[in-house]
Length: 460
Image (cartoon, rainbow, N blue to C red; front, side, top):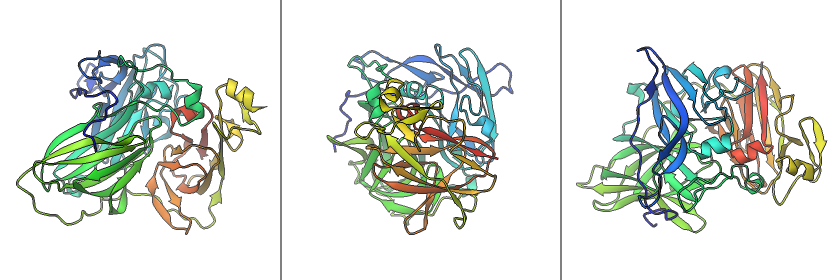
């Protein structure tokens, strides 16, 4: 495994910045979205112009304890673009979900919006815009929200670290390419970058003592890249997915994290003193180290396998008699929409849809329709079998609620908010419609979302 991701060799990181505050001691913290210049590439290159929260990429990790109330004000200082903040993976009031035109008015340049809600669940979550998502996320607007368990319920670890996995589409002069509406991206795999980073660096590095146990919170904020991660010199247990603890940590040698997904892993550093333990990304042209842990001695004492994280209070899924609403994904390059699709109330042929920037359809409809995909009553259990007839993977994300996958044998997979559906797959999810409101349900590859792959669910 090479020690560096060699797309643009070397880079420098950014210092952590505290949240800015409005005048007045009781004012809520501010996240100010604005252009900034930061160093992503090596010293030989110029700094890169990004869009950032409070001048930092990724945005500062916000940290609260379960049960606390989050109060954050978004201030939009972007040039000529509306914005919002979507609190990804959180169960929260509908009006706080951050979807312009569905749950709130768009936040115009020069304006602000106050988000305030209680944090029901402990876990690893993240925040990002839900307006002009391809451009705003690709330019750097994303950050992590960690909700800690009550102190007595936290796992016994020697460190708790956030690793933000991302990629950037960079020109040779370290400028972010502005082809955010490229038809190729929309009709193929999405906007893939050529420069991979961890916490805005080409490689995360840390010194550790042999035998240390770390909780690593892996967050994929890339808009299209699916990370396949492998490990060397460490013993690894998967403890939580998308913020939700597993019933028991499972020992793993590899984990796949699609866009918007998170994975909490517990790792014991077992490499010999003087050696390096690695987390590496499997790419088409090789395997590249993303995180390196320089191990020092003397060696520590071997530990027992970790206990499960404390579960969140989740609703009971009762599948018997649950209503099924099928979802069929069609379109994209190599498959297309030979039967056309409905867009903005009109049935259109494939060529006309492409000229309008629409390449995908859910159940024969491109984009949001007047009627929801599902109109559920409060407390109802809904099953959605998803059939992917396209040639590409899609990371399907449900807002405001978590779901469990219904496996072929009828058992239920772990709680998640985002599920990757590979080409040709049929995967079924089930959820309880537990919070009133209109909730987005879409592919979290934003290039796919903006070109047809989005719908919504009403709970009333």
